Length: 267
View (cartoon, helix red, strand yellow):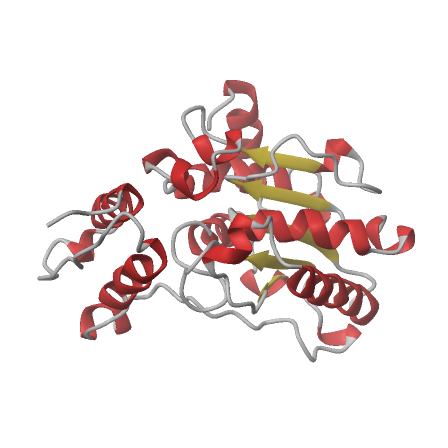
C-alpha cells in the first residue's frame, strides 16, 4: 500500500491533534502518486464519518453574520476561508481553534461573529492561487458585511487556499472597503510576502512555519506536518487581533495575558 506524502502527513497530524481520534478504527485509503485529489477526499470522508465526529464539539460550519442588520451585528466580525478540501465552511485544522482563542479572551462571546466563506476548496483552485470566481465572491461578501455592519470591527482571515483567496479578493476591493478592514490574519499562506493593496501592513499577520514549504512556493507537494499544525498558533493570532481592540470588553486578566504573551514572543 502506497500513500501520497500529503495524505500520510495529514493522517498523522489529524490523529495527533484531537484525542477523540485515538479510539476511532479507520481504514486508510490506498493512494497512488497521481491520485492526490481522490486521496484527500477519502481522508476527509473517513474523518467526518461516524458518531464520534458528529458528536464532537468542533463546528465546521459558521454563518453568524449573513443577514444581520446593523443593530444585531457583533462587535468583531470574522470572515474566514478554510483550506483545500476541509469540511464545512470553516474547516477543522485552523479555523475552529482560532475562533476558540478569540472567544476565550472576550467577556461575552456574543461580541464575536464568525462567517465562513463558502467555496469548493478543491485542489485546482489551490494550484492556481485561488479562482477568479471565488475571489470575486469573497470580495462581494466583504463589501456586503461592511455595509451591513458599519460599526463592527472586521477581521479577514484564511488558511492555505483560503489565504490565497484573501489576497485575490482584496485586490478587487474598492479603496474605501479595503480601508474598513481592521485586521488580516493568514495561516500557511502560499502567497506569503505578497502585499495586500490598500491595507496597512501593520494590520496584517502572516503566520508561516519555518518548515512549511507551501509558504515557500512549493504548492501541494510542499504540504507536510508544518503546514497542517497552525492550530498551535491560535493564541498568537488572537493576541494580534485583539490587542488593539480594548473597547470590545476584553477582561483585564485577558489583556494582561495578551501583553505577557507579546513580551515573551510566544507563538
